[in-house]
Length: 183
Ligand code: AP5
Image (tube, rainbow, N blue to C red):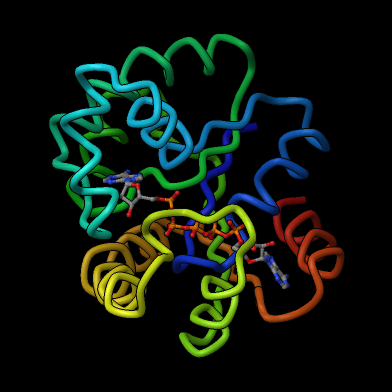
């Protein structure tokens, strides 16, 4: 099964994505993790994307496709995937849907969360991410989510493969709701 997780910063995409991939026995791919690893390793790609990550800006689409294109095809050959953080714009969704046979996803799960709850989670995250470091960057990420990524929710709703799950409850309850939504 091919699952895409969409949600605001802090909505639990990473938390749920790892668990869901285990349940489904498919690989998990987080574009945020992938880009942060590249930045931490100081690769050429990492040096290009680090300023976007630090400022809470989206990385340009052409760079994202350089990162995901071959990986998606490889993951599909393994029987499916759980994607966290991609697609994040309607143009990413359209291009991915055109380039993958049968489209990018069988089901898209939208983890909904009030902004105030997202802010609290990001402020208290223990890993110390640079994009959680100040209030303005957190606010900017939320604005980018509403302007760039929420339209992706509507895009997949109109295609009939969107499932909405309330992300504002304990992680185990969210997991149960996600599993119920995709079955
Ligand atoms: P990305 O890594 O995707 O970050 P994000 O969307 O800001 O989301 P987070 O990782 O902050 O939150 P999450 O929803 O995964 O929640 P989590 O489980 O971690 O992207 C980072 C950057 O990469 C972007 O800003 C952009 O620059 C770039 N990028 C990535 N993909 C891109 C793309 N396709 N195009 C362009 N640029 C791209 O949980 C958050 C916290 O809440 C944790 O502390 C967790 O323990 C806690 N928590 C989780 N669930 C619960 C719960 N149910 N109850 C209480 N606490 C909870």
